[in-house]
Amino acid sequence: MSLAPPPSSTPNNPELLIWALFLLGGSDNFIDVEELFIKSFELAPARLSWRTRQDIPDYKKCSKALQEVEDKKRSQLSHLFEKQGSYKRKLSGDGVTWVTKYATVLASIYSDGIVPSAAVQEDSKVLRTITESLTFGTFLNDEKAELNIYEISDLFRCLPDADTAIWKQRLDRVRNAAIRNGHTRVISFVDKCASVVWEKGDEQ
Image 1 (cartoon, rainbow, N blue to C red):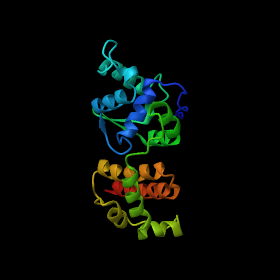
Image 2: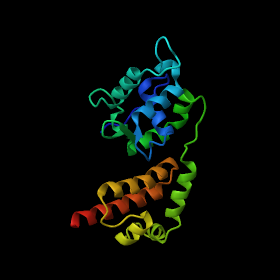
Image 3: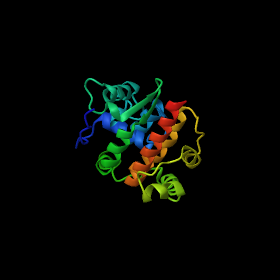
Image 4: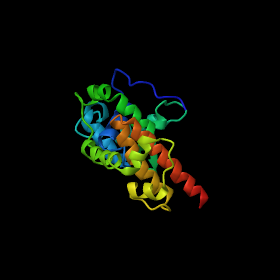
């Protein structure tokens, strides 16, 4: 998969949607596309409004922008989104990394200043839970040390035999917080925990 290019220096609707999704908390949660369109319109009403009524968002323009993002044949940004059915979107792991890397540029173009993530306080809580745990301490002392599935389950508050989708949600929540805050050791820790979880699942 090719890496997404840096944001354009001039406004465009696909990148506007990606930034709006980030501001809505799409790093961690699936967001309804209608909510995404409204947020995008709020950020740039002149780009997404009706021709004769600039106070009304044009659904066709918003839908076209979404299609441009997700066009796998033409778009270099399609892998930045994940879909849940027809009407839900969130940022993929690559999407979180891309937005976080270029947040200053995107904010200057679409928000007229740096806009902090709404999840900053929650991120701190999530990361503190991980970094203060004995399991993470074991990992820091020896990254090759074996991790126990039950310790991981307790830390992530997830049953060992829980559905894959639930495990993925719990692991991604911590990984995304770590990506946003540049906590590389936590990212590595989550990846190792994930390998233990998926290995356990294969045995069942």
